[in-house]
Amino acid sequence: MKEANLLVRRIKDGTVIDHINKGKGLYVLNALDIDGKDGNVITIALNVKSKKFDKKDIIKVENKFLKEDDTNMLAVIVPEATVNIIKNFNLVEKRHLTLPDQIIRIFACGNPNCITNSNENIETVMNVIDKKILQCKYCRRVLDINKLLYA
Ligand SMILES: [Zn+2]
Image (cartoon, rainbow, N blue to C red; front, top):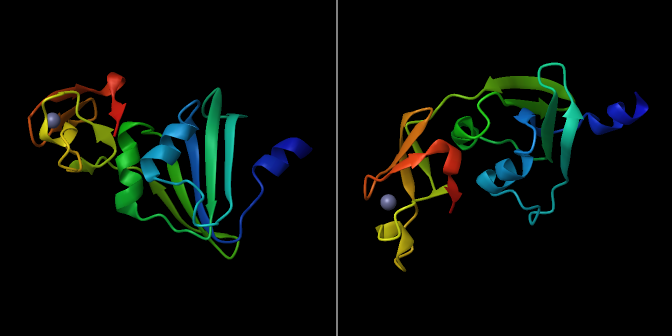
């Protein structure tokens, strides 16, 4: 119990991404471009026991309030995750993820001839057709949600 308390230790200010499907925590960090270079404390807990799931991952980013646009793109990879905004130890906002119309930058297009895979430095833009299907805005290649490549 003590150990569990340590893991879910409250933060003063920041964002807690909870109920991440186990094993997806590192994808979430990658998708949100969180690498700790800004000096903020980031806590990552993988395979935490959960009531809702068998196990889950949790990420806490201190002193940073993630915006809805940023977190909604996670709906494709971790649809059940919740985003909690904490201010002065209080939960001020609890968000469920909603699927956005487009996802920018996160996923690579599977078409090697696509302009986003050229040297032109164009960010990928995936149109979200439904929660199982993404389509490249540029070449219209349809991506299988289970075989996504990260840009
Ligand atoms: Zn493409």
